[in-house]
Length: 385
Ligand code: MN3
Image 1: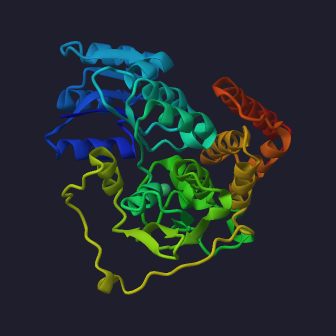
Image 2: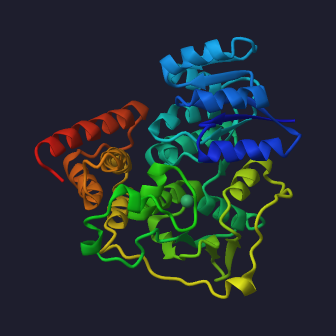
């Protein structure tokens, strides 16, 4: 029986992970954590019988305690509750699918308890990869990527361990605004940006895909996961989202992973690794598809790519500044208080303002996040766009 904790169980990845677990009788849910969607969490509790659940929001946690008083499930809350859920002795694998930098501490604590970590939370590696990777080695746990691109790269590496990676070809759909020029992006509204051509995802990541911030974060994540330099990662636009990424080895051979865009494939692979298992769903029909097209990325019209590259290469706390500025700017954009180009302009302003800190520890990472948010608040109040 594989015992699994899911942090972020009511989100897009979390709910699909539960569907995978429901279809595999040798998997069991031991712990669940959510932000505040207790209606869905209550259903999950009654169906999957975890031992402990965390509701990050304390008021909502109180409400859930009343609702599930007839069950033996323990309800905890806040950051200490989230960490408790992550280190719960009943689980051997923790799937972290929470949104944002609150994922860092539970990830660190889970590794320290010797648990394998399936990672869908990008912020953990983007902001704290230099802390996480040494811990993964020290505690001898598995770090399993869940993001479709990183899972694809990970799958391509199977059977090729020890072979030198020449280059990672990180594919990108290009999002809904592929091919557009800067001038055409000025008046984009949240409703326009929330339409992703291939993948159904949460709101924040859908915006991030449209600006290419998401791809920038994925480059930083790939650097840590696969121990390569930034010069070894090439972004390739592939609008059909059929090739999920590829690896070029030192002999010139390129291995790619393909499939219909379905997040259950990487989720299930992370949960069953190193095994593959049957999974219902659409199958790729290459003859029907006809062609797969490729383009070079366009950093002139999608400046997030340049900013992400600069943040990654600068290192230290700069990826945190990039990420935190984007989170704050996207929230403001979704609120109709910031223009679409204002998202990347705000990231650039924060990166120019915040002082670089070398090799930040967790508290310095969190300080940088707060500092970035404070800076942007005053930047916007003073007319910055
Ligand atoms: Mn992705």
